[in-house]
Amino acid sequence: MYTYKGLWTWELGDFEVIEHKNQFHVFHLCLENHDVVGHIVSDDGLTWRELPNAIYTGHPGECDDDHIWTMGVFKKGDTFFMLYTAKKRSERGNYERTALATSKDLIHWTKYKGNPVAQADPRWYDADTKTVGKAHWRDAHIIEDGGVFHALIAAREKGAPINYGGCPGHFVSRDGYRWQVKPPLFRPRVSYDYEVPSIFRFEGRYYVVALPGAGTPIRSHYRVADRLEGPWRRLHDDRLLPDCNHAFRPCHWRGKTYLFHWTRKPMDWLDGSRGCCALPAPKEVVGNGDGTIYLRSFDGWLKRAKGRPRTITPRDLAKSKLGSWGKWSVQSDRLDGFAEMGTAIRLAPGEFDDFILDVTIEPLDAIEVGVMFRADDAGDRSTSIQIQYHTHYGRAVLQKHIHNVRPSPWCIWRGRTEVQSEYFPVPKNRPIHVHIVVNGPYVEASLNDRVVLCDLTMTRRSGHVGVFVVDGRARFSDLRVQPIRPPHTDFGM
Image (cartoon, rainbow, N blue to C red; front, side, top):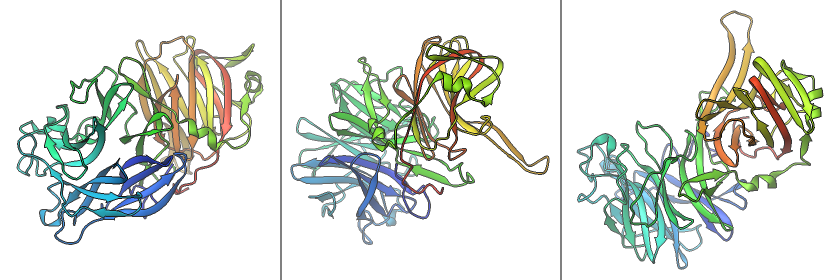
């Protein structure tokens, strides 16, 4: 996990990732100035080191003398190409164009003398500032198909209503230097913006992931097509991760397709007034066979294992004096919990800080079940993954339980806060395999192999792990905790 080590931890912006010599190379914006493209590299997708910055804003009068925005990187022959968003000071940054830089080694970059190489064509796009005060043309991402490089860009469809004009702009090249602008790849007509569009091939299909921003629900979605030229379509399940996870970029590595993204949230483990933008582990793309895809937790987490995993048996939990209420009993290799009313908690002895946790939960007739971690002895202060069952769907919730009692009646900070939630299609009364990764403030939860929650939050730095059941009966088995090495980046802890 990576955060920019500047004045603030939210300085990491949109990025591009490319595999080279079995390493991940990430090029990223540095906010808020937008004056440099940073460069980091990783051997494993988790541990990053900084390399020399790639490019800077230009000299006065050049097409990028004001701002540099999101970039896309690709390789042709022995040359790497970077298409990046350029803005001019004389235009107050209101016109966005695509500029080009090249490199032989991903370290030393030279800007192309013929910049800019592409901009919005008024035949198909809003190309001036009359409609929305800005000519949108940014966030390039490139795919090669049949010897042609296709670049997608965040643009706006000409003549569309303001709140429905965001689209993936499209321009092409055969040599990487000369680019021809084409009509939009497709016309989503769902939002003002269509930011950071990324395109990749997977299992014989083409996918575009983008953020329909500016007033729509802040959640990235994807579209799919059997051919690059379309038709593109929306499937019933078009979501990848909940809110706060954006700027998805694909990378093919060791025979698998991964999506990187950044996660941005207030730092509630401090005072909550400062934001944090982190680059977490990539997530593997998995197909369902019908064109829908989902994300699986990164298998590289196990390489951060610290010591031996600990198996917490049902008998360990049944004998524990930690937790509160409920009736607990051991049935062979399973732990049965019953709460006639409210919440029953059972916590294991010993404390964990950073770890991978796996458990199988069978809800039986319970309304809510879940896993608690970094908990105090009673589970009164903790973080938890709660699985709620409704009539026709399930809902996963990342929660924090906090209190800070002070000597006055109006200074009691307490309660249960919902940090993040997501719906999931798991039928009731069937076992669920829960997989949780906790690394510093980073919390990731998967249900039956699919990542459904991914966020930054931390009530306590360490504590007990355990299970709970609300209003009914549930069964727990195969609880296993693997400690992992602590985070290596500065989250202000």
